[in-house]
Image (cartoon, rainbow, N blue to C red; front, side, top):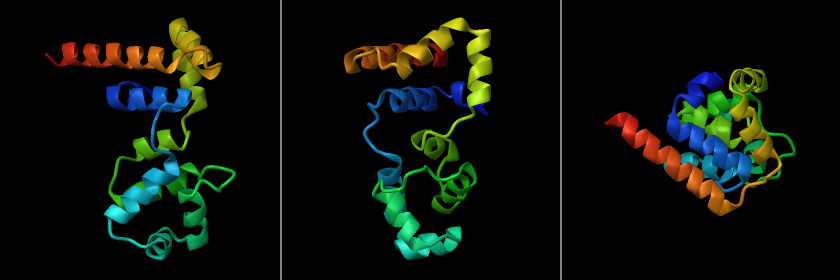
Length: 142
């Protein structure tokens, strides 16, 4: 699954942003925006997910101690008709083993992830990295 994420430049950038904390919306805020755009109340959304509506409130307000399971996030994506990978990334859910395999094959990936984890990049540096990624994407599309 991680290979699929890394092969999608937009999602890769979102993952990088999430790791360094520069992505503007939290998982809960994104869920709230999508739910409202779908015209669902918290209660209706919770019923479709087969969970208690108070849990939806906790998620949307960032008061849940642990992110929802991958399975629940997949159900949320289905109900909200959005890409599940976007929600998984925002929730910090990704396949650690797959990420480790990629880092083993490409040591630079491991170095980048370690620096991101240690937050050794400034926001400006992250923006420059993302700009280079965008430029690379544009060249590859031509």
